[in-house]
Length: 310
Image (cartoon, rainbow, N blue to C red; front, side, top):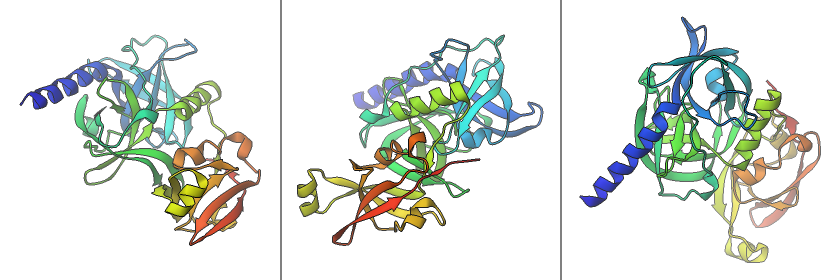
């Protein structure tokens, strides 16, 4: 019983801490919105006003909208930029709007499978909804409807429903470690991790309105290396290719489903984030050597990342 009480106290504290700063977001015309989701107030290093983070798929092509907070207050927002590859978008609140204090941002790189997480969002327009669960998996890849791939997502069993996208995923300390991005199936939710890569993406969107990104087009998940290969390389894990997007740079280079990626650009790859970090602006149009274990053989594949557009 004491453990249950402790669990409940943790979830209640996180909910009370984050709830005020997670908004219900309607994009497009406030009277007839074209889309809806959630958004999280974050600290703006530039100090130029209130900044919110949501999902790129929530804002889609909208230029603005309205954020409504748990206390009933609202703020008109404009879209500063969106990055489909990370499924992140940054919004700026109107300068005259009164907004809640920003959340405390954590670092998803320290997450472990089985760790408690709490999701705060606005599913079905129900403001301030809270669910709790555990981290079910790390380093997942998410294929999108338009053929792109969102890399390095967190898998959780915290219940997510339409409208949760763009909301906060927090650890037991109330620190935001992810931005909820999709519902993949019954009992399966996904979130974009908050880490050094995410911080760089958000800063670029805040500053320039876009992120120049390279794109390969592989869907993968961490997988163990065979014992002999692990001993030879001095590491235990690679990135197993589950799917290669048709007509993508990866497909043109000859990458195949089942390949186990061990290196990219001569640097170790153990999970999706290792590959993602090598696909920023300087990788576009440049030959990127990718070493994969295919069957019992090591194969070098030369891929040329394209620039993600649209």
